[in-house]
Structures are given as C-alpha cells and as structure tokens.
Image (cartoon, rainbow, N blue to C red; front, side):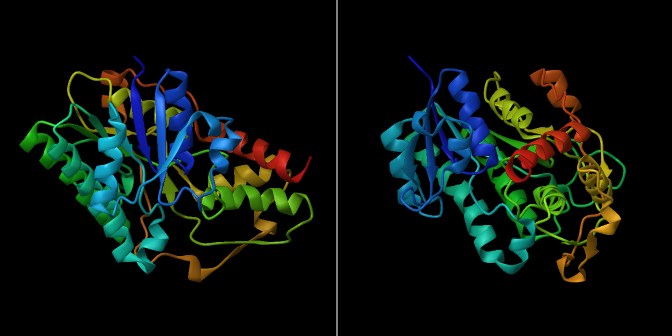
Length: 322
C-alpha cells in the first residue's frame, strides 16, 4: 500500500515542493490550508501537481480541526509547515505568531498522543532560533537565542517536539532549516523582491527598488534540496533533529549585486535604502553547519547561492522579459 502523508500548510514554497517530492516517491498526499475555498494553490499549479494532491481545510489553532483531519485521513507521516512565515510580520502580529506556530504545533502533538497511532511527525524549525551566529556555523548543539516573536515561537515549538518525543516516545523531529529560496517565493520575501525588482527595472516597469539593511548575511540554499532533507529525517530508525544549511554565508548586498548583474544592471544605480524597512532587532549574521545531516542522512546540497540566484533570475526573466 502507498504511504500516506499529510502536509499541513501545503500552499507555500516548501509545501508545494514537498508535495511534489512525496508524489515522486509514490505517496498519497493530502495537503491542507486554513480555508481550501479561499486559498490560492498557485504553487501546486506551477509544479503541475494540483490535481494530484487531496486538498482539505485545517486550522492548526483549532484542536478539533486538527483532531478530525488526522483521525479521518490516518496519515503515516505528518509534515507541519503551517503558521506565520514572516519574521518582520511577527513584530506587528506577535500573538498570531505564537498561536499559529507554537500552539499549532502543540495541537498536532496532542492529537498524535491521544490517537496513539504510529504516525511520524516533522516540525518545521528555523535558523532564526539561533539569533546571530557571528561567523561560527550553528549546529544541533548551539544554544538558541531568538530575537523576534517568530523565532520565540519556533523555539517553543522545537522544545515541545523534544518534550513529546522524550515523554511519550513519539517519532517527532525538527528540521532547523536555514534560509532556502526558489522561484516559488512570493515577493514579500526580500530575495524575490530583489530579483523581481531587477527584472522589472530591466523591462522598464520600475525605476528604483527600495530595500532595508543590505549588510545582513545569510546562509542561503535551494528549497527543493531542503524538502528532500525533511523527507530523509522521517525515514530514519529513530527521530532526531537536524540543521539543514549550506555552510556558506553571503551578504544581502552580494545577493543584490549578483541579481542585478544577471540583468546587466548596476544595483547601486537603482537601489534606495529605506530606513523604515529595518527590523527592531536585526540578525546580522546567520550560518549553519550541516555536517550531521550530510553524515547521517546522506543529504546533498549541490546548489550554491550563485546557482540559486541564477535560477530565480531565469524564472523572472520568463515572467517579465519574454
């Protein structure tokens, strides 16, 4: 029989790529959003898999909604990718961040415990939990130092997973993923904002692009490779947490320069710094050490940041310049 996976939060970048990956592994895939009737499933359509995923409504803030979905569909694996995804937005909506991430994760764990079924659970963690790493790559033993409501919520969810794993013997794990990008990123993410902005300037649709702090540095990877790591974590003999990263860190200024260079543009001639875009408590440096994932999961990440930028630029070229 086919394995059955429930992806809670299937509409985003990671949910869509994960659904595609699982379908290629011959899974039956159920994907949820808060309201199927009102949600856009453009990412699933872009990947050509919308009609291959069973779509359901699940509100992870509502225990009964989570209970009903897991009880009815009886999945072998549950991937929780739902909840607020924006660090910046979490400063404006901190309660929503805590409820959608921490309380949502707790609801799923409680349902798994109460139903007492041999389901495996993946929790989407975040590099934001580490705070500012400096130039020392963070690994699974690096202490958390969250600097935003989003990071506090993700840290809480991670420790809830650990608690349930140790207390009740659940197969529950957290992937602590560093930044990962793709053409499926919406333009509210700064990476896609930069690349789409450069493409629009090249096409004559925009003159200048307003950005915030370009001195921040991140460890950026390719999203399809990161969702493979999620699946690999769920196939192990015992549940463990893993840092997923490339081990290379570059500045946002580097990212912008490379993106504009792709379109034969000088970024300095078109970018304006907007102080209001700076976050209240910005992380300047964030880099991860994927040694454990490479060794235990045999995970590979052949795409570096330059490859990520190129593929994202190619996608925007098709959208704005063809």
